[in-house]
Image 1 (tube, rainbow, N blue to C red):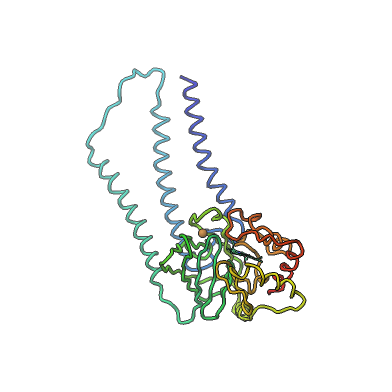
Image 2: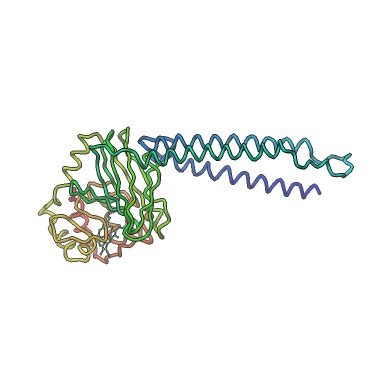
Length: 342
Ligand code: HEC
Ligand SMILES: [Cu+2]
């Protein structure tokens, strides 16, 4: 009998350990700077975070009451040596008890429902200010296309927005369902093929905020990261101005440009101002101004860029860009060319 109890105890400890350690590990993983959903830096993330804390507190209260009563019952009424083995008195049909455990949970659920519904509608129906930035984000397997229609900019994976000004996102998908999520700025919104979703942010602090596709969309879903740079209006204007320029033409890297233009690169990538006008992959007009390549799969250093072009699956095993089988000389030349595209 004693070993049986030990077995049960071990199981309880294991389950409790896993259910506590997993969230703690997830939390520790989540608190790398720029991804902590409990440290909002924008509307509506702030309101969503407060609601989450309210709901979590209610649940914690329920857990303590139920767990506390359970613990008292288990300890106080446990089997003892001198028990005669008879059943305890059974209680049936107590109106008070039945009412209490029906009405109280209903009230709790109603409170949580009303609080959530109110916030959902407040976020969806928030009046659109006259001045706002409009961005179209298209989810692709496994990267983000980012368009600023008003400014004529197309970029990828890295979004720049001004601080203290509303930005409206139109969310689309080129293939499967993705989900746009930057925890410190706003809640998750799905990108659905043939359907337009919208969301908005109003960031209150400058800085870099990281996001992630949060809908499983295929092999490289985990490497579909997003970076949102919230900048001062002056920095944002300067960024826009640079992105609007056509690609840099540097005669020193003509050989690399030649390699790019004479390979299938141009069927999948656009470099504005050149013959390359493919739209299957990211726009490379200002590739060198981005901090990462492959939707955050690698830092945008010359060595990584060369390795990426040689074989992108080195960084992203299920990637939809093929290895282009360039020789070393071509690799060096095309890398040098892409490095000039600031
Ligand atoms: C069949 C289409 C295709 C061809 C051909 C192709 N690419 Fe790509 N490329 C892609 C796709 C798709 C991505 C995005 C991959 C991802 O992040 O998941 C990409 C990503 C890139 C990136 C990273 C861009 C970023 O901002 O993350 C670079 C650089 C690049 N390609 C260069 C090249 C070069 C150079 C060639 C020619 C030697 C080439 N590509 C040929 C489809 C293609
Ligand atoms: Cu995705």
